[in-house]
Length: 159
Length: 289
Ligand SMILES: Cc1cc2nc3c(=O)[nH]c(=O)nc-3n(C[C@H](O)[C@H](O)[C@H](O)COP(=O)(O)OP(=O)(O)OC[C@H]3O[C@@H](n4cnc5c(N)ncnc54)[C@H](O)[C@@H]3O)c2cc1C
Ligand code: FES
Ligand code: FES
Image 1 (cartoon, rainbow over the protein chains, first blue to last red):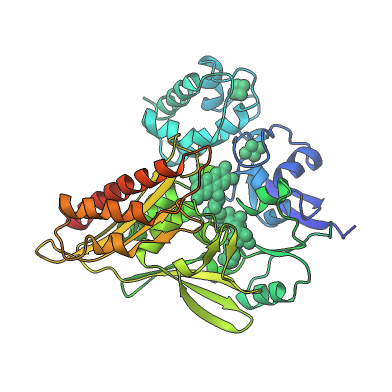
Image 2 (image 1 turned 90 degrees about the vertical axis):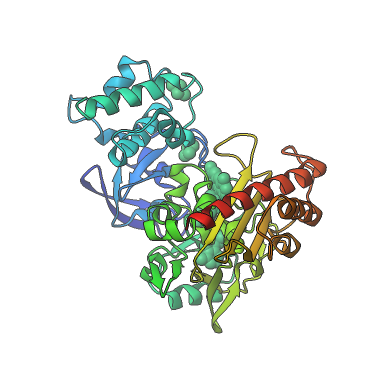
């Protein structure tokens, strides 16, 4: 086997080091090496968004990033969303509006929704639907997710 | 399977050297939204991946006397956030916005879209209609080529071993110019084009079309530049008769396949209709610019 690649990166504000094979994805490493299993694998081909994370402030699918690429970068995952016991407003509204059922899509939905609200604190329903088009859900029928995001947006604007 | 090696050089010269000297299959890694999927699904088994995102020049968007140069490693989201470029080339942005989800666009590049050489690549008809050129670096130096010279058949480009696209150059825009790209898909988001149509045109002060370019996607083995369709507009005020002629010329140029997304006849018909709609939108934008 080839020598493993040494990678040093920041995950949820913490400096982390790991070794990886060149073909391993960021998703593989988060789940299997760093024990951050909140990020889910639905398809491994960029279609479902269950593996959504932030990479240097950009929303990406972790299954479409090679682990070796994150050297020196900033990764944010669902594990960094709640502040201790205190849930993020999106996490709360997903609970209140039943935006999560089986839960597989939920971490990705939350990461994507947070990225939207950081750019646009007052999105229309259509903007939310388009922004979340890369996140598939087979349980909720989407409507409850959209309601949850709009409720969180409203709350975060202090409206 | 051979061992995979990952390299992330910080100069164009080093990237070219790595690719030129590779023994086995080597691939440029830009956003990876095609490459990583193709590796994951065993379509390709490269022995070398050369990540070009650490090369600073390839990450830049610069204005050069009214022209724009966009580095090959600029992601779709970075381009969509560039206000000046969006104002100059709204039709190119129409195409870029259609490349997958927000997550995919956070990584994907136009150069990857072009070099993956899919006939359904959404930015490519818009780039060809825009008259964009690519700058290519290779073992024998630097050369320029029009975008339409890059794809040669599905999955194949005219790039030689060791060559990489380093940037796109968009010409300075005369006043009263507009462009548009439309795609037809069964689903609004996250689907592959049945037909794509890009139109770019310029009007004179009296509203007569002085130049035009029309390109069609997903209706032939490569994206097509359709001269006859553009000629239908040039010298006219882009009224109903000219648009009718454009639609017929667009349909006549198609050499599509039958697949689950549409039959040949359907694609031929839709290509004409879509080219007409894209021309109307380009016209609207030219009048407002
Ligand atoms: C879920 C999903 C949805 C998608 N939806 C769409 C869609 O709607 N429309 C669409 O058009 N595409 C779509 N795509 C395909 C893909 O995202 C695009 O083709 C994208 O633009 C590829 O860019 P990239 O930077 O990720 O390319 P990469 O995957 O990095 O590279 C693609 C190919 O080009 C080569 N290459 C890349 N850059 C260069 C360069 N500078 N010089 C020479 N060769 C180079 C690579 O070696 C490789 O062969 C989708 C993909 C996914 C996963
Ligand atoms: S697992 Fe990454 S998009 Fe589905
Ligand atoms: S809650 Fe089950 S997939 Fe969305």
